Length: 111
Length: 120
Image (cartoon, rainbow over all chains, first blue to last red; front, side):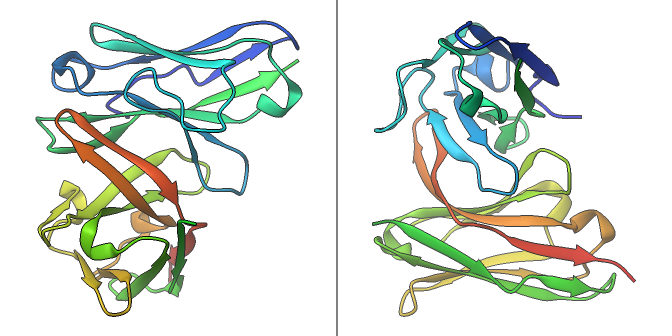
């Protein structure tokens, strides 16, 4: 059971917009700890996609955007492409567990 | 260019020990925070331990007392000593470079991972 809750899967057609939610609590996201998003393709290491809730590292397309409100965060992907098919993880810090916490991951399928 | 390369994984019996290494380039281990993050087969990501620039360490509760993270500045390498291994420790172990600040902790660079399998 992950501390942060994500849907196990989402799907969308090419060109569409999808969102992935990440729900936490008052000891992590709700305590104003920043949220990050990672993208992982099968057999490869995760890659940082969004950091500090809304910021994208250099090289990440602006089709990917993060947001946060209260104890939840979301990753939006617009103009969906076949190459976006991957697993997506949210991540934050929890001050009761005194450590980094992840969501369980969401598998994105491009129809 | 920032690079991290893990090694040392393998098949080990329950109760055994293993030491993972992470050789880094493009930055100094002594000036940065580094973590070990693992991923069990078919499962999600799980933070395991961290070593901070000042040398202090933190661990996930389930590995505290069994795992020890350390670093060698001369070799620019971070280690994870894993003792009393359990089947549930089976995972790919990634070494990461961390960005840490007030309300902030994330992983901006990752190694390719090394697989640890605990089984009899």
